[in-house]
Length: 81
Image 1 (cartoon, rainbow, N blue to C red):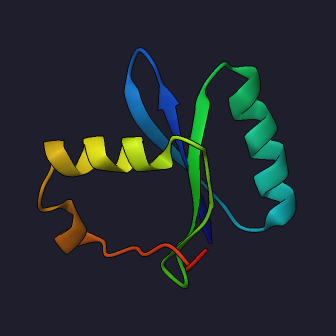
Image 2 (cartoon, rainbow, N blue to C red; image 1 turned 45 degrees about the horizontal axis):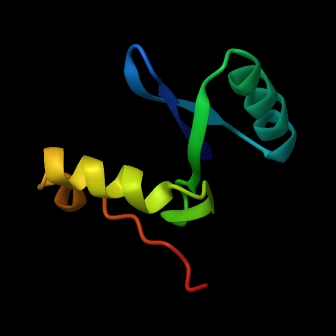
């Protein structure tokens, strides 16, 4: 299962789950057409960030500052670059 995290400027961060790469492509297009900004894509099975935007660090820093215990609830890690 893959999860797309995106930003709706009016309502905040949202997510959409998809089952495979084809659904991922289709959902990414739909999200982008609505003007939302895609922050990252998570692989929920392996608990990794598989795709991230250029400003991913800023987004994750903002979330961690607002919700300092979030890392304890859902530990996700990013693969080594």
